[in-house]
Length: 288
Length: 199
Image (cartoon, rainbow over all chains, first blue to last red; front, top):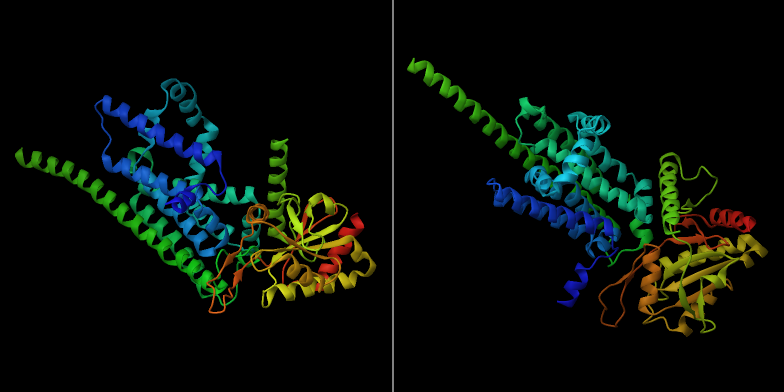
C-alpha cells in the first residue's frame, strides 16, 4: 500500500502538469454543472471519456511511471502511445470544448478568450496546423523526430527538452484526433470530410508501422542513451528495443483502426441524418 | 536567478538539438558534447581512501570524470576504468589536473576498503566514492542515470544494472562531455587535453 502510494507520487514534480490537469478537470465539472442548470445536460459517457483521458495523461507524466519511462525504452514508447494516441483521443471523444467553455468565468470567456481565439493570428496558426495533410505530417513527423537516435539522446538527458517532447506529443495528439473525431457537420464547419479523415488515418498508420518494424527488427542497439544512463533492472537492450518497437508498430497502428471505426460511425450518422431528410422529402412527394 | 538558469538551460538544450541535427562533432570534440544541457557538478559523498566527506567544491580546478559502477562488475566497469586509465596515461603529466570519480552503486558489497583498493588499481587519479542511498539517489537523479539489482543466485551474488556513461566536467564544475564505452581512449585524451588547456 505504501509502495503503491509512493509510486503515485510525482517523480519530477511539475506545477504545469498539475495545474493544467486540475484546471481542466475543474473547468469541466463547473461547465457540466452550468449546462445542467441551463437544461442542456452533458451525457455521462462524455465525462467518463474526458476524465479517463485526463487521468491517463496525468498518470504517465506525474507518477513514478515517468521514472521508468526515462530509463526503459519500451516504457517510454508506451508513455508516448498514451500521450499521443490514447489519452488525447479519449479527451476529444468527449467533445469537451463547449463544456470547458461553459466552465470558464463568463467575463474571461467573452472579453479575453473568445476575442483571442477568433483573432487573425491565432486563427491563421490554427487553420494552418489543422490542414489535414499538415496535421498528418506533423503527427508522424513528431514521432520520427524524437526517435532520431541523436535527438533522442539529448531529449533523455535534458530536462527542458524532455518536457518539450512530452508536452508536444500531448498537444499534437489533441489537435490531430480532434480533426478525426470532430462530430460537427462537414459542410457547415469546414471540418475534414469523412473520406479525408480515413485517408489521414491511413497516412499516419503506414509510417508508424514502418518505423515500429524497423526498430523491433533492428539487430543493434539504436537508442544507446538507455544503456548510457542505466536501466532500473537488468533487461537486455535488444529485448527492450524489440518490445518498444512492437509498441510503436502494432498498438499505435491499431489506434488508426479505432479512429477509422469512429469516423465510419460519424459517417453513417451523417448519412442517416441526410437519409431521414431525403425520406421526408420523398414522403412529401409521394403524399402530393 | 532561477528563471535565468531555466532560460540558459533552454538555450543550451535547443542548441544541442540543432547541433545533433547537423553533427555533434562540429565543434571539434571527439566525444559527445553535452555542454549546458545538464546541471553543474554537485554531490556529497564519502571518499573511500580518506574516509572523509567530499563535495564538488573539493574538485574545482580539476577536470572531473564521473562514472557509476560497482567492484563486482564482471566486464563493463573494469573495461571502462581501464580505458579511462589509458586516456590518462596519454595525457602524461597533464593527468594531474584530472580526477576520475568512481561512484559505487552497490554500497552493500563495496565497503570503503574494497572500493579504495579497487579504485587505486586503475591509477592515483581514480577515487572511489560511497554514499548512503539518499546521497546516491540525489546524485544519480541529477544526472538522469539509474541502477537496479538482479535476483541473487545461490551464492548471494547478484547482477547490478547501471549506467555506462562517463560524464566530463570542466575545471569550473560545468558539464561538458559524455564519453561512451565505445569511445577510444585516444579520443577521450584529446578532449580532456582541450579541457585542461581551457583551465
